[in-house]
Length: 342
Image 1 (tube, rainbow, N blue to C red):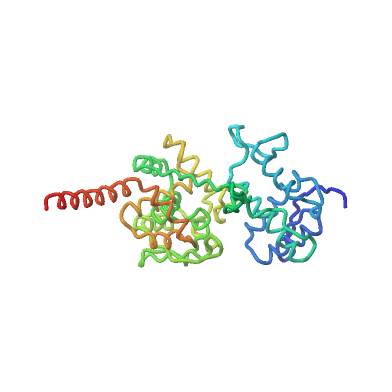
Image 2 (tube, helix red, strand yellow):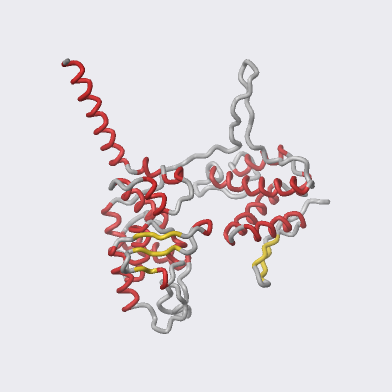
């Protein structure tokens, strides 16, 4: 079969379908649609579109060399780079390349299971040998680089809150800043999910489809109450808590794009260059750790499936780590002094 041009086409006929125009790829996307959530389906389809745009081959003809060439192109080593970083420098972020390789590997794992291809061209890693000939531990194709997210200082938080104009906007920001909710979790809150008396909310559609109860400060519930009584249109028919307040979409659920615009306007009025939804969540979880909250409790608050995702807050809470170190060092010094005096 000749090379093909992947194009994302979506349709809704009872259930959303996404296709790229190749039978094998589209069959796999149907499997992904049956197994995963909408965002995963779209991300997988986009990753495969990028891969087969760069690797202009029929899927069954792709080799390991093609995959390695794709990595080079994504990192900017050559003329084949599809998307570059904003600074025009070193290509895509490593995390993006890793995600795309994961999508491609999943596709070829599917083909291998069906017997369409013999091996998965996306290697599990690169094997190296020592001078004695022994095989070392496999190195990953693309190394994981974990960067610490930005955390707002109290002055920045106060400035951001001061740049808000509505109780609705304040309540949404406090949900992230005081409860550590993700942007999508805030927008997905329903009226029945609010438990004011218990000072907690129910996240019905968290990341990966996981549900959880999240305790939040009374400050959040005070802002929500003001919003519901003063601002939320009385003729709103949706059960979503946060809705558009005016214009042609008045009373409809607020979208991610709408929330991002609110955040941009608040940052501009506050004179801040940072303060995204994700940074507010990180700020919340970092402050909780600095205040002594157990790591397992933060994991539950954040909705992390793995404790490893939560361990990053050990590094973010610099003041807490320094204080713990000083206590331990003082104890060691005291033991050494006691020993020398005996």
